[in-house]
Amino acid sequence: MALPGRPFNKPGGPGGFNRGRFAPRREAEHRINHFIRVPQVRLVGDNVEIGVYSTQEALKIAQQQQLDLVEISPNADPPVCKVIDYNKFLYDKKKKEKEMKAKAKVSEVKEIRFTPNTDDHDFDFKSRHAEGFLKDGNKVKAYVQFKGRAIQFKERGELLLLKFAERLQEIGQPEALPKLEGKRMFIMLAPKGKKKKEKEVEQPQQ
Image 1 (spheres, rainbow, N blue to C red):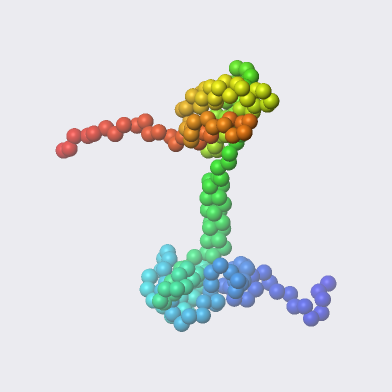
Image 2: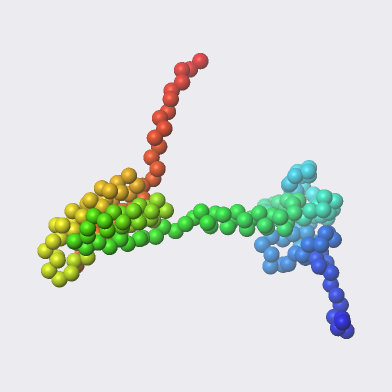
């Protein structure tokens, strides 16, 4: 039952072109329709004659096409407006931003731990993991952990890390030679960019 003194508002509210869309709000990213307060605008868009119009005339053109008048360059003189479907414009914009965010993956540093006595099976297993990390665009920090008197085998650790770098040389580039810090010797590998293997074929000029 409707409450007294609380009038029902249809979806879309005032200010739109009666197409059932939400009413534009002042905190919106762009000024649209009746929130564009300047006396005249430069109109662009599909199916419109580009030029300077009074704002009221531009609104009428947008209304005739059942579209919105959207201010896209408020600092221009006069401001530039476009006749578009604003809801679709926002949807496409969000979709594009989401796709760009998904592509802009942040590179991480993945660690691979060895010991001076790492056997061949464990070495192969961890090398395959490192290969996957590099292919995903991440850096790999491989290190040999020396415990107690095992530090006397640091040459063995260095050879192991060099072997590791050689194993991944097709997809990983060492940033420096193995380095000893405390009881750890490590090497950092960065993913290699894909090399262009295609050779340009010169064609005779005609």
